[in-house]
Image (tube, rainbow, N blue to C red; front, side, top):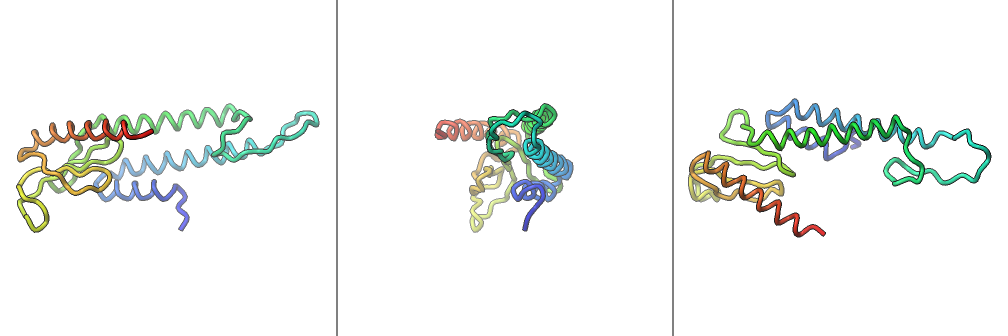
Length: 173
């Protein structure tokens, strides 16, 4: 199945809608469509023949390549605006901090991926050995017990997320 905005973006938007964030899902889809339109426009601009005198033609590149021909001014401006909009959206999501989930004792946070802080009652059969707040990372790891109270859990979760991101930054080449 060919999704017009891409499989990852569609899956993320669906996830956002399921977790009471339909506005963020709409913005994500809109930015993805604008990005795709800008790529199509840029590819069309590059494919258009130039009115230059007969000179040996260089091979044309796709929109994903790094061409030797600079992009058209309008296309470059649109691409720069989309990059700025996406960076602004990510900064706003990160600055929002812990966002409550609708209907349950669950909080979400964006820091280079979605993090979940959820309250669970003691149930050793499911792996919850204490009643309190558990943290799940973007890689889908099993919840790690943080603290019995919400404010302490949010502080400790922020500290653990920062440590995790610092450790993964060191590992990347």
